[in-house]
Image 1 (cartoon, rainbow, N blue to C red):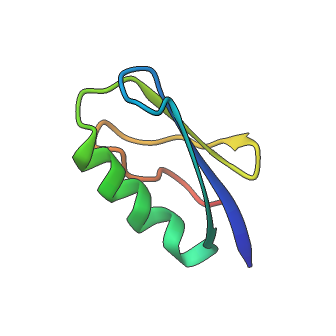
Image 2 (cartoon, rainbow, N blue to C red):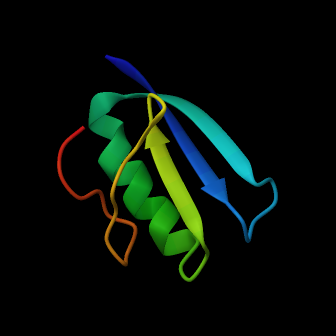
Length: 63
């Protein structure tokens, strides 16, 4: 299933990045983004629903 993965980052340019990805790709992409943007203030939404992440940007729970 294709999902809309949206990162909104107050500390980056551009502030918002939207990706269309398979469900299985959400967690690895979040992990990469969290490592690359460590320390930034950002939120993650999947299909317009805010998802929880840990301090490393890893997905908490299921989507």
